[in-house]
Amino acid sequence: MKFIIPKEETFGVLEFAGEGETIIEFINGKRTPTYRVYNLYSSVQKADNVEVRLPYALKAKSFGYEERVQLINPRLEVESNRVGERSYVRYILYADDLIVFGSQVEK
Picture (cartoon, rainbow, N blue to C red):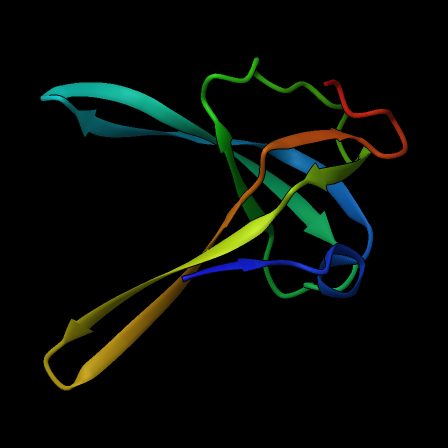
């Protein structure tokens, strides 16, 4: 399931909080980096940091701490697991890019 996100209502103001892990997956039997994870602060989602996955093929991002940023084409994917009689749902945020707020998207 993929869901396109209304950015302003969902996240409000986003600020850069730091770089996270690199996601590595097995592709054709080889360990391949697929995503870089970045942590963001949200004025709406205050309980936790927002983690966003960007394609590894993009150049690594470098922003100032708490610099205002914006997501390009964000989408949520749902991952669920059943353990015994319980179910667990995890929402994973992906985006095509992450840029300084108000800057132009490169084409």
